[in-house]
Length: 323
Image 1 (cartoon, rainbow, N blue to C red):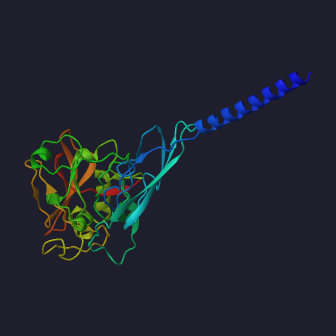
Image 2: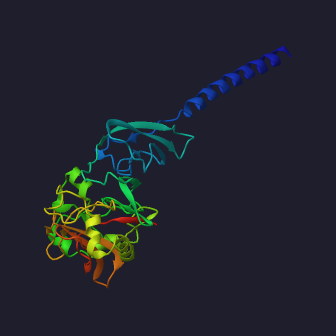
């Protein structure tokens, strides 16, 4: 009896020791690994640029989900060394831990317009597809942009191609924009805006932001009618003084607050840039025929607001109207 009891006790002790040893090994096997996050400091951007996948582009050595703070679509104020953070959650949380990483980005000041707005009027504001802010003005029953458009994105977030080559520009049949003489001066761009071909104006992805549309031929007809007629409306639309318009800037009063500027145009024949300082050209959203579209233009020595149509490959300015 005693011998049998001792054997059972010894056997139980061995089992307890084995169980304890097995439990330690199992515990060691459940240590989770930390994923490796690869994310470099993004290139500098301007304050009018919304954060996108260009900046928020972290990678991991395993599959999972990235959550950024601030997120896509955020517009940051100007300033250096601003933090961008990502939290990564692995698909297999049983074997891997969450991981975090922070990088720094510099937000450069955007250009500043030096246009002379009408100080006697009250201006509103709107933002384009890039988050850039513009002055707006109520003229009659409609709210117009009081500055030329300068977005580089469609409403859905797709980038509008910038075309600097003269040869490429003249043969385009798709959306594009350019800066006058391909300038990179942010203040100049902020003042006179960018030039677009009509394929950008008519693109189904929408050049205008949500709640707005590129001014149509009918919008312009109503505008000039409200201001008297096409013979005198130009003077009421043009920015005063000769800061941007050449002398004599005939009849310029800017009574409407529209603050039209002579941004010039880009030719469809050879891609050259002409007429800055003497003329402003604005596309409408209305086609004239398969090859031509309606536009408006103002000249430095008349009060007229001319209505005409021309090749869709031209590079003109754009104004939008609130829906």
